[in-house]
Image (cartoon, rainbow, N blue to C red; front, side, top):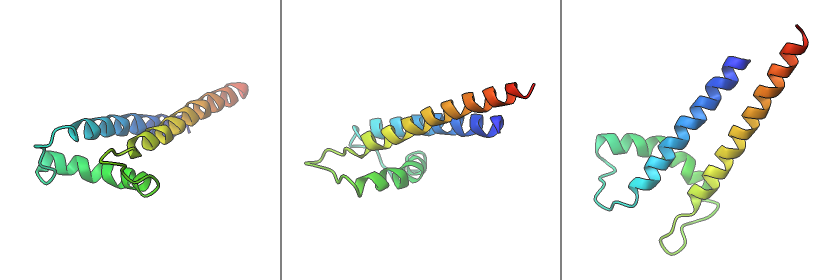
Length: 95
């Protein structure tokens, strides 16, 4: 169980970094989202961001979906941290 929680925590941390890179790249209008390095990043992050874009559509050209996306990722990471502590505490109680 510890390995699963650790792996999921690492995945969420890496995914957060990918989201940050994706968001920062949107500030550069010359980025070709169809070229290989950027298209992969877009394919990995856009489905998750589109979930939140359906809840809050872009307002006046400003996309607020990353705020909700990061809030949910933060909640998941916090929950995983608490789960890891609980699993560690319960496994040490059996020793």
